[in-house]
Amino acid sequence: MASTETAIGTEKGTLQELARRHLWMHFTRMSAYQDHDVPIIVRGDGCYVYDEHGKRYLDGLSALFCVNIGHGRLDIAQAGADQARDLGFFINWSYAHPPAIELAARVASLAPGDLNRVFFTSGGSESVESALKLARQYHGLTGSPNKYKVIAREIAYHGSSFGALTATGITSLREPFEPLMPGGCHVPNTNTYHLPEGFDVSELAEAIAQRIEFEGPDTVAAVILEPVQNAGGCFTPPDGYFERVREICDDYNVLLISDEVICAFGRLGEWFGAERYGYQPDMITTAKALTSAYAPMGAVIASDRVAEPFLTGTHSFTHGFTFGGHPMSSAIALANLDAFEREGVLENVRANEDALRSTLESLKELPIVGDVRGAGYFYALELVRDKATKASFTDEESETLLRGYLSGELYRRGLICRADDRGDPVIQLSPPLIAGPEQFEEIESILRPVLAEAGERMHVNG
Image 1 (spheres, rainbow, N blue to C red):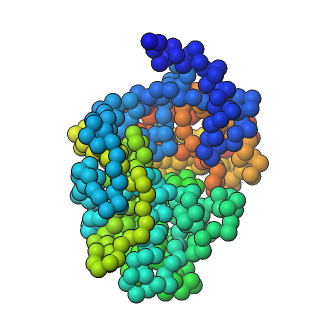
Image 2 (image 1 turned 60 degrees about the vertical axis):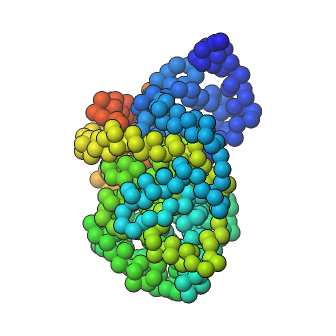
């Protein structure tokens, strides 16, 4: 039998043809591959992945903030195969099975405060969708049936399904599908690099209270916020921000949803981002790193208070997904969490996050790098036309800079990261949580010359 590499080598032309003809990739300009090869990743090992030609790349994005434990962990995958020998699948609709029960208890034991009820999904958008529906039904059962609106932040991404898209604050993602479900309201995000002159950071949290008052407190069901906002480039919260948001939600009987599809399970050096910033949400949405993406899975972790109305009489949360709590995914998640604890993965992030930040901040020597921000193993470099004034690029210039040069050149040199302009143009990095100084140096050695060249191409002022 031919090896994987030999088989792929023999069929690589066919793979390219089949990909172009049949594979509809997500969030992808398909026209880009009419004249260029589709990047085909065939193998992973630790912090690295390999393409069909055998070329190695440093996965500086953890395959979209997912593979926290690293690639190629056969022991994690084996847990799913072992589970399949006993039970490959059964639903969680009026039935239960041991892996889902054990995982729910395990996640509840890690979650902060009284977040003791775990509702499984297949991924992040499903988790957000579930949390928004849960908030609506909770208020209906507790005497506030008119509470249906959700307050989120500008430029924030919360998912692609219709309910999650209602919360998403990115105009270009919303417009093609409007009209959306009613109820989405947006407030300023915590981009302190571009605060208007005279604007105090304390006003960022107060904007949520003001929006609740504007909408009418009796109509607002939930506030949904990421601990560190992804879209726009890793916006961290100012001191006291989440403490004040929690007070506001309590004052107006509004549920606080911590969207941690990215930030949970070690990305910020804690099990949950809410712990990193010291606040107690009513729900946490999660996915991605729950299994380190070795199987699709997500979850909503709800407080006892939120669950209570559903535990009496004939009430039930009238919502679900066929594959939520899949036994193989549950077994893989348990093995993933075991590895996290056994191998000190969170401790590795805490020990090395300062080194990662220092390495990235050294790139501020380049004229094009205006800001470096983030936490844990989740960072963004904002690219600017003029560092002194923080002036950004036009839409046309961003297109040339990001998709015309940076994305392709960084990949060509062996670094997978994210060049994004949902907001101002940024380079985002979120390496696997097993990474260390060796990988940080490799990231810097690729980023520095490419960004220097980008600055020259764009005639950036120092």
